[in-house]
Image (cartoon, rainbow, N blue to C red; front, top):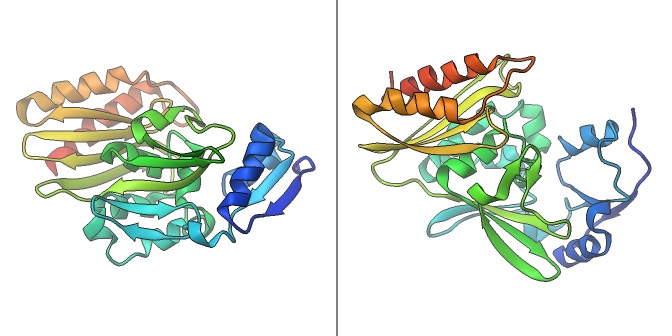
Length: 268
């Protein structure tokens, strides 16, 4: 199939983008990388009247190291962020997780903010953002607002973003002293959608464990280390309402959380 007919605007600046979103609302879609959007348009799951191209909005294409976060603008490709030489020192969880995103061809086009805005529950970038306690910056004609990652993702392909808002920036908290970061993913093939993905920020007595590919959105749980960890992982596995699908059973997903979670956290 091919997309339904739509109008196309190549935006030159952010003001133009938010004014168009204010005018068209639900009838407009943003395109930057298009790796998810084009498939949705081709299947006519979305039939917008207007497509707004933000690739030429220069002040959205930035990666900034700030006091407490790494800020990534809406125009930044996933490959650009992954190629950043200081990424492992700044946000090590991103450096570990990003090679698992699709393939190098899709990372060369797909944007960081686009993946977050798409909100696929098996995607790696939303999982990292939730695990680290990051933020999303939204802009409309009325102004800006900042939303915590835990509040932004509301279900499968569903977010707190309003129809007149643009995701202009995502903020990944910087690494913390005394914390070890690890990532692990199971899929049918490397680059496929995750059956289960786990991201961990591990301290001496406690771990923040992020789980993707199981619930309708990325989840984060605070778990104890030591003897109580197996029971905590089991409770977490049962709490996520895992479902059977063509890729894996709910029971298999729960077992992956228990076994991979223990391996990831304890480093075995």
